[in-house]
Amino acid sequence: MAEEQMPPNEEFFERRKAKRSSGNGADPGDSNSGNSGNSGLAGGVHANANFEDPYNLRREMTPAEPFPLGALGEILGAAACAIIDKVQCPDAIAAGSVLAVASLAAQTHADIVLPAPKEARPLSFYFVTVAVSGERKSSADRIALRPIEKHEDNLAVIYRADLVAYECAKQAFDVAVGRARKTKGGRVVVEAAIKAVGEPPEKPLLPILTCTEPTLEGLHKLFAVGQPSLGLFSDEGGSFIGGYAMSDDNRLKTASGLSSSWDGKTVRRVRGGDGVIVLPGRRLALHLMAQPDVASVMLSDVMLQEQGFLSRVFVASPTSTIGTRLQRVLRPGTEAALGQYFARILHILESPPPLVPGTQNELDPRPLEFDGEATKRWLEFADYVEGMMKVGKPLEPIRGFASKLAEHAARVAGVLTIIENLSAEVVSCATLERAIEIVEFYATEALRLFEASASSPEMRQAQKLLKWLQTSWTEPLIGLSVIYQFGPNSIRDAETAKSAVAILENHGWLKRCLGAQIVNGKPVKEAWLIVGRA
Image (cartoon, rainbow, N blue to C red; front, side):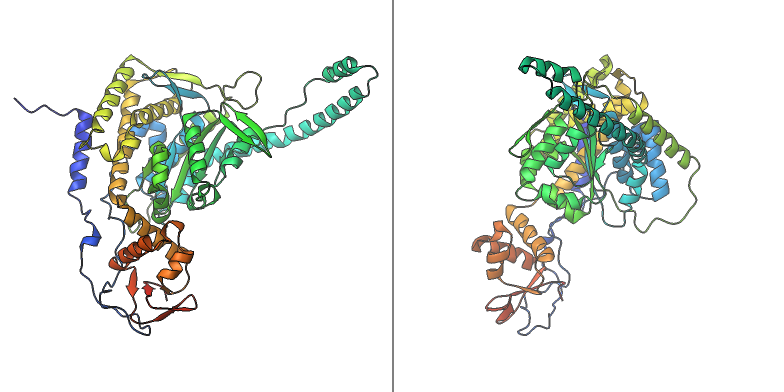
């Protein structure tokens, strides 16, 4: 019987799987080559510590696929190309920036209705863009965010005027209530007098659309008194990833809260000091730009994987353009494309959002559905993705992300539709095809990053110890007793610490010293030189 031809989507993933398998992803720990070295310390360095340069604990990644810029459409695609032309940044940086801004604008107006189950989902995207310093992440994001900043400026002007009016109305209200309380008569008479004053004036909403490193509680408080659609955007994502919100004590809580916002669930908080906060109809977009070492802290976090936060995130780590960015004249049409993008995003932001009647900042997005042809195509894609998650199939390693891939495609299709036609009521099959092309790119990125970061629990502990040595320990030497006492909590037992030290020694990050040494002011029998530490 002739071999059955693979469906288009399966060909896509199989082709990329084969390409990755032929790459240079060998584990550097399998190599024993190297040159001898000597630290010059008293007692010398053990002869086995013969690496001139340390090996990376993570596998080298295969090159990134090109981002399908054409799938973004005339407005977003042209804007991404214009940012690339103007800034000379990697394609996925520009694409992620414009898509995140598009999500922030579109999520206010509509929810996408999935064909199965028949449920509405927010048009919210979460992005993590990984790139080294110097890739011009900030420059690209600054251009993409211009319509957001302009809208915030416009809101601030309105806010200042409304705040003056509010304060006058509030003072008048307080005076009127005070007089009503002095009304002579019983409770019923006084109560009627107070009711006759009317409702208190509403304080104007804070003119803030984005924040960079909020705590979960701070984000919820902003939702209570600010705009119903917010963006957690930062071109220095390390400040959030390494900050209070993602600390060991708060990481699970923050991840759960962000996951709930992505799902569009009502914010519910009960705190002794703040009381009860119930906030339906809020939307959150997220885009964090971070350097590889910082991003790996989040992306390799087992708890974030198991909790499901990472399955909601589009991650991209594009190939560097550093060294190729020669000076040149901008292409014709670059500024025009940016102007068109600016005008369209600003128009959507300034269009009154659908609100629940009687509320100031509770969104009531309209449902956006697929047309008949798009519904059939989405169901086919969802079935193909399900098959791809079987054991031995291409998407098995990223089942968490893949399980939401069809929903991701629906959300992307919804955002593309709203950007191109704010009043649209249905999503076409052609738009869905473009969305599928975009999410397939992020699926290949997820696979590529998974393969590069896949490691044993022992290797992850070694990575954690290395990070601690590089960021928290200042002396040139380290000993086991210091790790037991001051090291990361999960490495303070003898077995784990010795295993982590052995891995770092094998990879050239630590070099064993001969003879007794002084570490942390105390003599120790065993000590290691931290490579690169003076």
